[in-house]
Each structure stands twice: as structure tokens, then as C-alpha cells.
Length: 353
Image 1 (cartoon, helix red, strand yellow):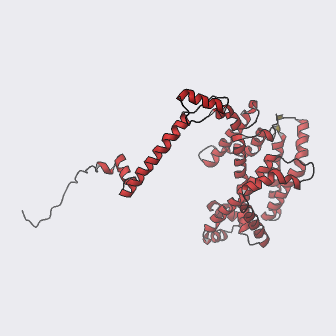
Image 2 (tube, rainbow, N blue to C red; image 1 turned 120 degrees about the horizontal axis):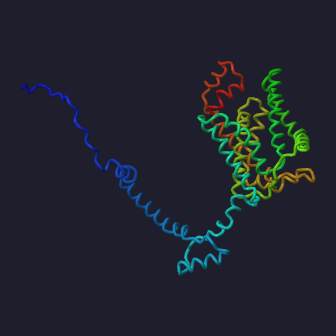
Image 3 (tube, helix red, strand yellow; image 1 turned 90 degrees about the vertical axis):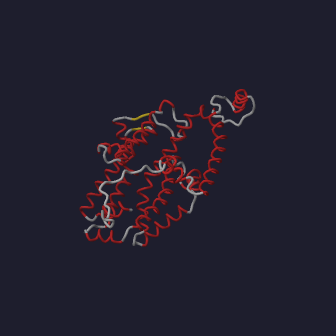
């Protein structure tokens, strides 16, 4: 055989198993926790801290007392169980006041109403978050902003119906004016028509229909709201209402019209410069001084307004950052397609921002 002839392998060698210390749990530990001597020292220190914290926290949590009429009785039970004073939690207040923490002073026989409103929230969000779900569920999404307040506060069914008709009136007027003149004027007139309905026609229409067809549920006063139910109500309201307002403020801040830009910048910077607790204090105490004598302004509605405008200011800055990150070519592409300002914002700019 010629010694200069090259050897060419015709078969692949079998793969060898990787070292046990490089795969599985040992491999993960070596790569993430013990890659270097410094990582190993930090890992050991972290494990010691976790052990010290959990060794004190877990007995305090799971060795607590759930049934007691007072703090003194709770401490006595701890001594009876463990033989000497121990640092244990007294969960009796949670056990005793659980439903109050969840619903405040809401009537117990009406708990089904906030529960139903919460279920409607999840059902209404589902088709918005998941496109694979039936589109008919969007009807729940549209109905939720009107049905949920009615379920929580009760009263006549014609109140949410009248509120919904305000949007219908605004939409119809917007379509009519937009076709007759231009889209911007249609939006302005449509908004004014909806506001006019809500301020002057909504109440008389609701009273008229309630006299003809009295339908409603037991009303609940705002002072009976509390706990988790009140927190989730304020949170959802603030998020839902602040988003469109934040979009308007962000667009206004980037507007070429000096008045609109100045008002938007002034509103955003003023609200962002004031702590939320100050706005809530104004809503709670000082707002009544600026209203006509005898005016009753619901306290929860005041808080909702303040939370909404506070969230809208921060939402506007987030959206403005997204708008600023878009390349100029996106705006030029919208112009090349012949889209007007609002079409460009709706179809090209805002989905990317």
C-alpha cells in the first residue's frame, strides 16, 4: 500500500455523550451559578441569606393563628400552642374581615353583581387579546363599559342605555358632517353632539323611559364601596379612559398648531409634576369649594377623574416616545398612499407606536 495515499473515511463515527457535568441539572448549575469562583461565592452567600429569611418567615406565616377575637386572645393561643411567647402571625383579622377586604361595605346579598362585572371584564378582554376567539364576543367588550357601572351602582337600566345613545348620536353626526364637509370638522361636531346629549338630553330621556318602562336593580351608594372591588374598579377605569386621552395628548404635543401644542405640553407637564396623592386630596376636599352650592359630586367619580388624567399624562409620554421612534419614512409612505392625517395615524402610525 502506498504510504502517500490519503485515507478517506466512508462512515461517520458515533457521537459521544457529553460530559455529565456539562448537561442536565449539573450543567445548568455549573454554567449559571458556579461558572467562576466569584459566582460560587455569591451563590453560597445568596443561599445562606435565603435560608435565614425563610427559616424565620415560614414559621411566622404558617404557624399563625386564624381564629381569635382580639390580639390579646391571639397571643394567648400562641403561648398555649407553643408553650412560650413566639413570633407568630395573627391572621384572625383576615379571617374575620375577608369579605370586607374584598367588597368593602357592599351588601352581601348583592355580591353577585361585582362578580358578574368581573366575569364580563375577562370575557370582554378575551376577543381583544386573542384573535382566534369568536368575534361575537366583541359585543361583550362593547357592552362592558355601560353594563358594569350599572351592575355596581344599580338603578335604572335606562341610565347606561342613555349613555350608550350618546355615542350613537356622536357617531351619526360625525358620519353626516364628515361626508358633507371634512373629517376633522365631523369629529369636532360629533364630539360636541355627544357631549350635548350627555349634558342636556340624557337625563330627560332616561326619566321619560323609566316612567314608561321602569326597569332597574337595587341602587348601591358609593360610600359602600371598598376593598379589592374599589381598587380594581378605579384601576380599570383609569387604564381604559386614560389610553384614548393619552393618544390625544401625545398627538397634540407633536402638533404644528401652537395653541394645541402649548395646551398639551402644559397639561402633561403640570400633571406629571404633581403627586397623585395631591390630586386625590384635591378631589376629596377642595373640589367641592369650586362647585355651586348644593352640588353633589360623587366621591368615586372624583377619584376616577383624577386617576384618569394622572394616568393620561404618563400614557401620553409613553405614546410620544413610540411616535418619536418611528422613522420618517413611515410618514412619507402614508403621504405617498394619499392618506390624510387621521387615516395615516389610524392605519400606519399608531399601530407601530
